[in-house]
Image (tube, rainbow, N blue to C red; front, side):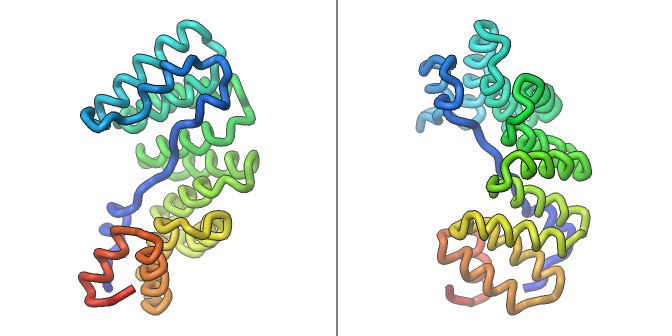
Length: 212
C-alpha cells in the first residue's frame, strides 16, 4: 500500500462547480442550457460554449455575480486559471457573501500552486458558509500539499461529517493515512470509499487483492 508524497500530490483532485440559475433570476434559461454537457460534445467544447453564453449575459447585465462566477468555473475547467480568478474577483466584488466564489477562487489558486492563497479563500468560504463541505475537502487537499497532514485529516473529517456519502473525502483521507503509516485506517477509508462507488478506491483495493 506504499505511496510516496510526490505520487500522492499528483493524485488529488479539487472540487467546485457551477451554481444553478435559480440563484440569479436575471439569467435567461437559454444561457444556462449550454453548460449542460451534450453527449456529442466534448467537455472542452461545452465549457467554451458556456463562456460565450456568459459573455452575452454579462453584456446584458454587468452586475450579475452568478454569471461571472459560472464563467470563472468554465475558464478554470479549461485551465485558464488567471482569467478564472479575475471572474471570481468580480463575482466577490458584486456579492461579498458569495461563499462558492471564494471556494472556487481557492481552487484556481491551488491549481497555480499557491496553496497559501487557496487556504485563505477556503477559510473565507467556510466563514460565510460553515456547511460548505467542498470547502473543507478542498482545504484538506491544500493542507496535504503543504504536508500539514493532521490539519488535512481534520478537514476531511469535517467534509465527511457534512456529507457522509462523500467517497472522495474518504479516499483522500485514506491517502493521508498511508503517508502517516497508518495502514489499518487507510484500508478502512479505501473500503468505505469503494462501497460508496469510488472507482479509484475500488481499483486500488482490487490491485492489492483486497475486497470491500
